[in-house]
Length: 266
Image (tube, rainbow, N blue to C red; front, side, top):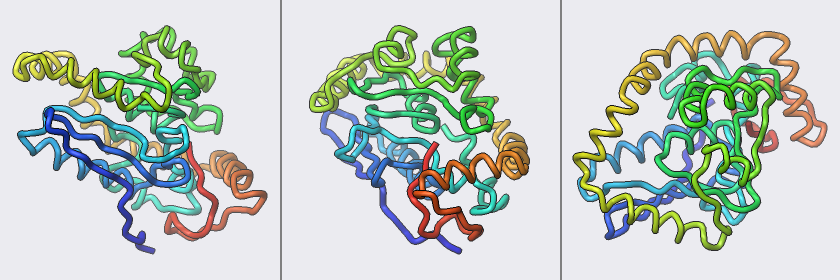
């Protein structure tokens, strides 16, 4: 079953040389395949625009949530398919504010600077649902906060409060929700004072090898992740989560990743 077309993104170009990209998929910006594709297309469009030197990712919702992560319906094998899960861009391998678990945390970790609201939380909590943290996501967190702290957080599915996340270096600043965008714009103005050539070359020196490894591992990781997701133990565990989120209704097996299930996320 094909997904009904949606537009979950709002893009605003700023004369200062950056674009604001707001994610607005109510109620909690859960990230399904269609949303990941929209993000990929938006990034391609903005990166091709010579007037855009930077991007700010933010939530377009009134709720204090950046994104609650990947939609569990995309991970629950009876509601999706191997072909859907592994087609580009695979959910397990693609490359702020408020609540930011799992996929939302990964998206924010790919950014240069992370600002969190005072009531948010952030982390990769897949282990709590009986599935593994994707290899490259775990590696990215380790590069940011160190392998020791990342090891403890990931194995215990810890979602950090703002000050704890800042102390570890997982985020860079904390701001009230009403001042979040202004804070992000001020950081962007300071970053764009640096000449693009030296800044971009330095980023490549720091990240190119890891990015290449991630790209080469995308296919094998998606195949291996599907084997895990379709195992009886994981199907049972995610089914129980979906049932709780759906108010006690058992999830069906539509094979299309849609239907009338409650919004679910990881």
